[in-house]
Length: 199
Image (tube, rainbow, N blue to C red; front, side, top):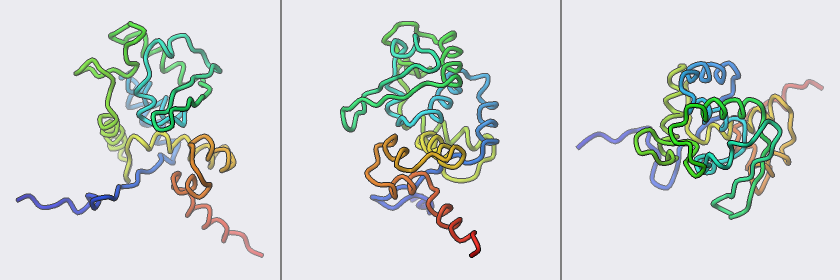
């Protein structure tokens, strides 16, 4: 009988994935993916929006092929059935256009992020493994997965752009500010910084 993995979460629990905190690591992953337009597009999309992996993977070519930087994109959330809108930036649009040029299926109802093996939309579990692989490829230590992309967006909005927690709470659809701070893995950092000031 194989030995149990000591790092595997207990039944009913989960391993919390982290955001990619350092901009240098984000650039390194993009460089690693530069010859893989689908994956670069997927990563760029994930770290520039607050969408869940399942929402991103539900996209079709017809939903995005006409969009330009500054345009709004609305995706229906599977959990609530409500539509959530984001505004696309230049990075995402450039990555999408590069991918569309070589996309193997030009039909408007084709999945944007298509599996080369099945010709269907990538699954969340596949994306989860892809993100882990990308992070390992640049020597990033820690726990990463598909949620890391969404968390990376929020982390940098808070830490670099100083966006207020209530605003990020709305973007993520969270019910409390504490949930958002915990989700972004920055609560401990911000509490620690409270003690940096000398009176």
